[in-house]
Amino acid sequence: IRAVFVSLTHIGPFPTQTIVDTHNIISSFSVGNDFFFSGHTGLPFLIALIFWDTWAIRIVCIAASIFFGIIVLLGHFHYSIDVLSAFFITYSIFRLSQVLFAQDWQRFSAKDNFTAKIS
Image 1: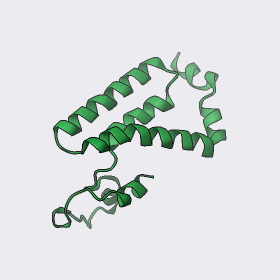
Image 2: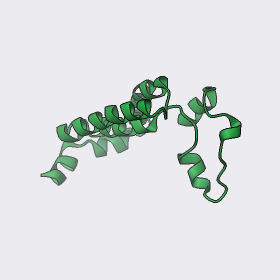
Image 3: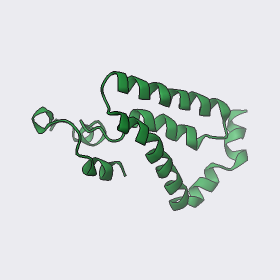
Image 4: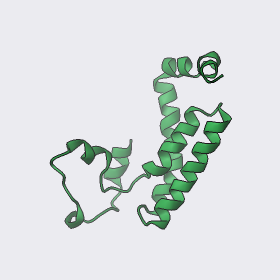
């Protein structure tokens, strides 16, 4: 989903500023010089959605998501639309994965499965 949005968004670094690292091909896919959408904001929010029933994880991850969003905006690492859209896109990815992987989600979200490991 992120790759589709990156290809549709025409804001980003100029080609003359792009650094191509041929020594580590994995970094080209995970830590590119693209902007859309903010993974710094989206990942903690996704973790909050996954562990929504666990109050402490939810609060810490939402706070981290907001904190990282503010930091990347103040540091000029992302545009404001990258940070704000991260919440909507991440929620869409979460809901889509619940539908596509319904059996896995049911096993994961079983009340006895996760809460028994914590207590």
